[in-house]
Length: 91
Image (spheres, rainbow, N blue to C red):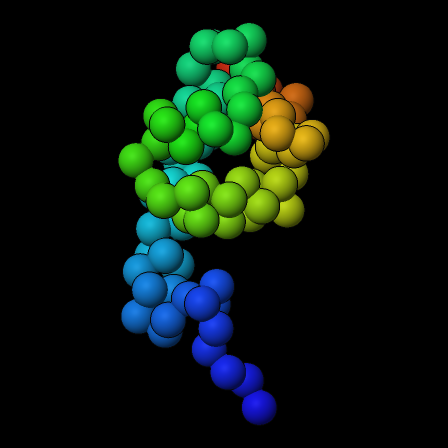
């Protein structure tokens, strides 16, 4: 039996977070491809720049990594070459 704990999201919070993911993902990619920081950002810097909760940022980063758009290494986040190339092509 699953018990809702302190760290588990409530159903209504999860629904809001799911809705925010594409917006958060797009904001993160725009930030990474903007040319600042030579394309390398820390998770903390992204959380400060993107108006989303730390949990939404984390979930968005994992989704972007699974899609092959970002590399995550410890606390560092950087766009993949494929993401950079798509940005160069303005697609």
